[in-house]
Image 1 (cartoon, rainbow, N blue to C red):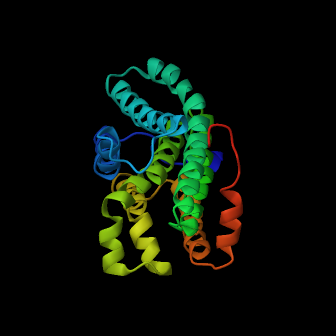
Image 2: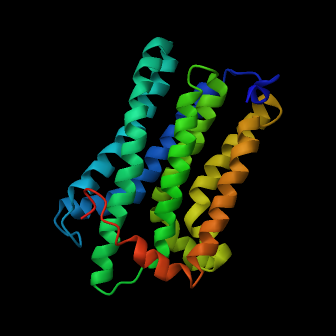
Length: 255
């Protein structure tokens, strides 16, 4: 992995502004993507009473963004020492986010299937998020004390994966209306938010360093392949019975 760092400037005077814009874009997606559903739940208009695991998932997700926001502010204040200490919370948040997201989706899927609302094809998406986010986030934590340039780009990619789900809730139906919901249509209506953030990150490196960081060149193609596989599985007839079996898993706090 040392080759990822060869001849690549770790810092640029515009980095703080770029990551400030990045975290603002994350909060914007969450606000418009999840607030309508959260507001409906607070007002008692949700389809079902939220189980404990859903509250844990929401709290851990917001906690991740709050932690990331705090970390960016600490670097701006030249408090790298506190930044490193606070970053240890990530070792707790990442597994909680991954598990609670999957368990909450299992609960939701079982509820809607009992009502005859068959959305079994959708279940491939939380499986993708459960794999992609912790893989990137744990790698980022591994590099926290080794190289900041790798660390912060892995954090960006990990966060963009899950924030993309918020953007899909916000504008997914509009994009579906424009592009449909076939193989490529799903790529547009589900993953546009993530991919716009990733494209902006690559463009930023190209503008400030003359080329993208190699960690982007390594990981972004893997993310894109994962997205393509998601769309393929989503539209495959053989996936439905497998999905039906999977959602019957009785994980702790998922029922």
